[in-house]
Length: 313
Image 1 (cartoon, rainbow, N blue to C red):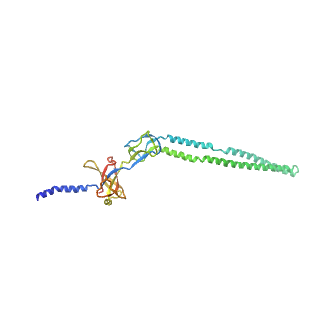
Image 2: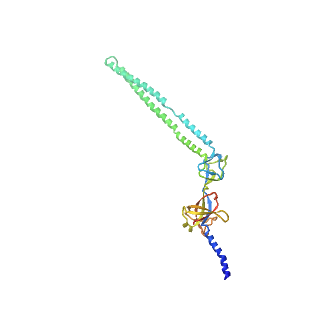
């Protein structure tokens, strides 16, 4: 009887220790990741400068490099020169119109004089001092002058219309060429390698002096100030989590200690998936799990790929 009591006393701490270890088991676990952005060249050309290194901390919209803009600058100069030649191809109708207007002015003066002479001749005929043929001559002269004035006025309209049509055809190229200049200006802006987000350079793919192509990756950047823990939970644990819920995240500090962080659940998968081989959930017998993402403010210790554990309570 005493031996049995002694054995019970020895096993009692182990029983409590076993119960305590179950309570300390994580509700979920996973690895840390970060939203990565691959920055690519937007125009082809030689990389003139690339002022970054892996681990560099960059600010959003900062200029970190330059792709040779010379080919685009030459192309722009060529288009602008073409625009300038358009005005040389146009015709100025004003000198020709002015000549015709001067002729009309002279003809109107002659017409006025013809009317005066006609009136004088009519008076002379009444006094039997002139012949009717003289009156007929002045009438013919008036008709000729009227027709000449009408022809010149019509000629002005023809000249203005013809010249306007010709100039419109030439200047119709103006707008497309200006669009080309605007397009080249946009490409020139893209020769500056602009960093899109605040973050840390994770991988550098290109160096100054290399020739790149549009769409070719230059470097990869991620914001490590807030890192994401992707963990997996079972269907029975879904009722314990909700968006914006605060949870405790534990990361190994040593063989027997943890670093504790406060995390926020920002995403819960709406579909189940098979348990990843590298992930162990609280219920290892479950075949289907749900992924969740937890944002954790990084104090500099957390790294991509690091293992983390989650407690909901």
